Length: 275
Image (cartoon, rainbow, N blue to C red; front, side, top):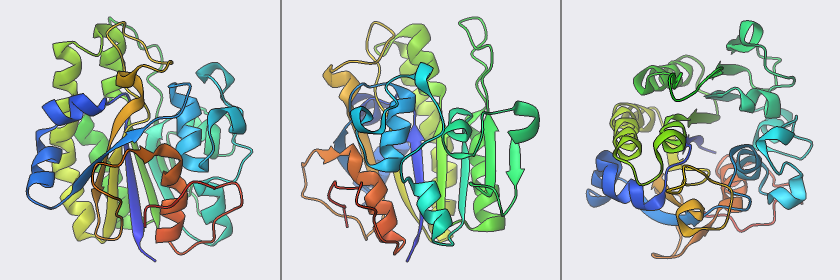
């Protein structure tokens, strides 16, 4: 059994990770991490892919096909399975994750910070980005989010820790996936991760860094374009492996996390594990 942290950089394209995420690429060059390309499921929309990443099911099977259809997950997922197994989970993420896995619709006054051993996710911090628009991106600072992740890891040492940041997706929507604004934001996320990932590794965490989907030059994501489906999968771990150059299956993330934690996989998780 080993502690695992999954970092989801919302909207981060594979090619942008290669060109603008200097820390992550340096970690690969130095042998501290390895990188694979991963293929997102369809549709390439956030809430459906959050659920895919956590259930190992494609959207057409788990039933969340768009952000407008978000509801509590009704499939075995990492948070529910680990809760039943007596493991501890934590999350710093967009409020969609509370709706999916936190037990109710999100209320910013009640659910912004959770420390409750009986809660579906016992240790959680959520941001809403309510009212975000081109004039007000409403993004938390990346280093502040990373500090919250570290606080949960340091104080509670959850077996599974999720960190989800939305800023690349936000700038991609406003300026497009080919814009300098989008690429610069990817580098800012990368710089913040350079301050977090080594701390997590020293604390005994296996760390994965990936994305739900990319974004195109139309400021959009949903379809089957390569820039939408090709996302990075960085692995800071000696326990995970796959053939070099292989394109990995996004549905493999959930069963891989469970296998690392020594928890039995449900029948619904059919994708091969990466360990």
